[in-house]
Length: 109
Image 1 (tube, rainbow, N blue to C red):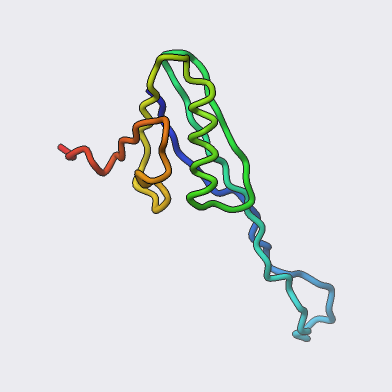
Image 2 (cartoon, helix red, strand yellow):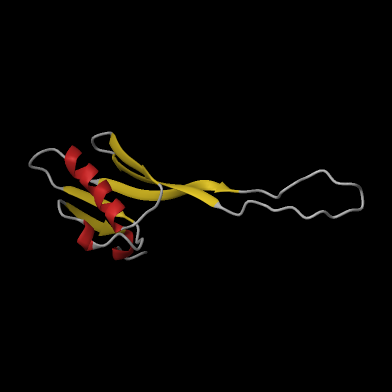
C-alpha cells in the first residue's frame, strides 16, 4: 500500500525597497513573476521505500509518470494500492498498473 501526495514549493517576491530622500515617495518597478516547483511523493511504509518526482508544473500526464514510478518498484506479481487525496488529476484514467483510492471515497466519522 502506497500513500501519495504532492506539494507546491516556490518563491513569491517580497516588497521592493530602495534608497530615497526623506519625505519622497519614488516609484519602483517590482518583479511580479512567481516561480514554483511541484513535488510528487509516495511512500510504502511496509517496505520502507519512497518515490518522488520534482517537476515545474502538474497535470494528468505528470501524475501518470509518478504512478509509473510506483509501478516499476512494485514487486513482480504484486499489485500496488495508492491512497491519495481528491486533486483534479487523481482520476481513474491515469492508472494502468495500480489501484487508486481517494480519501474522499471514505466516509468521515
